[in-house]
Amino acid sequence: MKENPSPLAILFGGENFTAKLVDDTEVACFVRAMPQRAMGDILARAEDQSALVEFCTYIQGDPDPAAPPARIRAPQGLQPVPIGWADNLTPESFDALHDAARRLNFTTAVTWAKRQITAKKTVGPVFEATIRQITPMVDRMIQPLLAQIKALSDSAPKPLSPSDSPAKPS
Image (cartoon, rainbow, N blue to C red; front, side, top):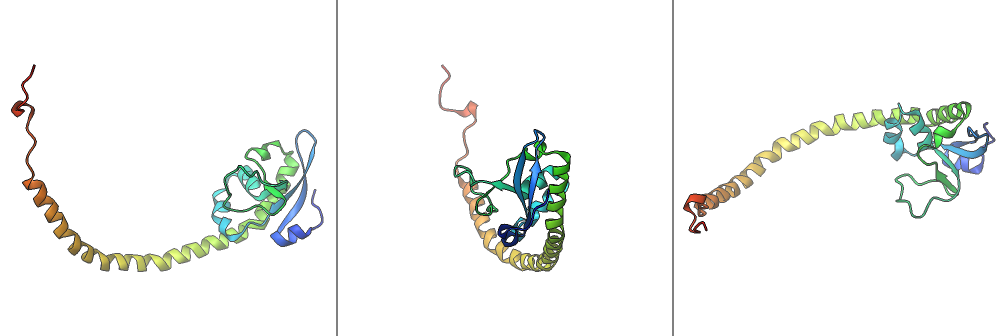
């Protein structure tokens, strides 16, 4: 199932596999260690094994030029597998690809998540302090505007009620 590392596997951080489909055909594929920008996507797929396999697995071929640009570019000469592709794998191939996707990405994704939490803990109090300082200034600027709008609406002519309408019913 697993093959020797290729230059592609070394460059993009991943592993080559020959996956077997339920119709007994074999497909060369590459399970990628995803870049940092994809770690949120990895965590979002942590409980959906098929989605994780499909997100991290590439097969031979150039991406469809008509497809919208992907957030994570495929390695050159490879294309992402289509949604539903994992449903066609034998259980052994699915397990091997899923294990590789987890092994190559979960530790990095957990570290990424911890950094995100730390960043939010750092930025949160700064954001709250900024809001506390800006709110009074914004209120001082908005209150005169609101007063002018209210004065204009109070001085505007009132619409006639249907009974006061000058139009006569026919």
